[in-house]
Length: 167
Image (cartoon, rainbow, N blue to C red):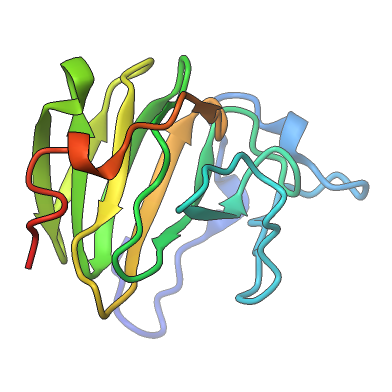
């Protein structure tokens, strides 16, 4: 069909591939679900030093296999060690500079800056850090199936390589 103005496509014959009836409203319609800015629930898994708010989750949308939210670390702060159970985690740094410690005794780390993407495998213990002592760090994060957060015993700042010496 020609997409130029005046030649609107005819969607009356549109056939859905697959069954999405489980996402239908009470009226039977399947529609996008919007979580408005400022209305995101904060009653999700948390770790000290990191704040997570849900944009999309099983708690307030029809989603059943996805958690998508915003994670923030205040200037200079870091999370406690934790992992996300069976969940695969993907993240993108929206603003700030981040670091993720991982490995034996959290001896290894990767640094991230605005626009960087990261994948954290299931069950991988890690610590999420804000390298900047003056600006917040904000990540967009997604997990499947849900925002699983398993907090682990704390590790002293002095045991994290290059943490105390960061600029």
